[in-house]
Image: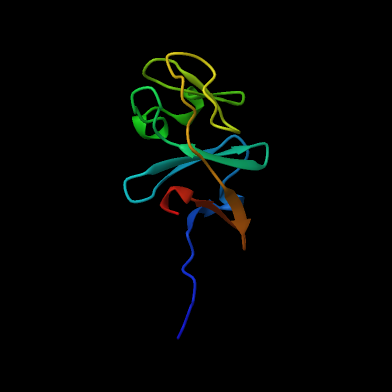
Length: 117
């Protein structure tokens, strides 16, 4: 019997094409994930505000308008979240965003959606 494990890691972008200060959005079966490069470290958060479910990177605004230092700002009501942890920092959001593991494997930035575990 073959017990080959299927990878749960989702390709985001080649590391050389995903520089510091940039972000990417990936859709995992209707569960969008926002991935950020902060000074060479990668972080991933749910791409929906915990306040009313409004999208961040999927809202149509450039990421530069949504990221302030190490904070992600909701374009709808201005709630702020920590890019590193997903912690809610200001009202009207009180709940943190789901955070996901990110790795670089063979030059590819990948994210894992552990909500499927």
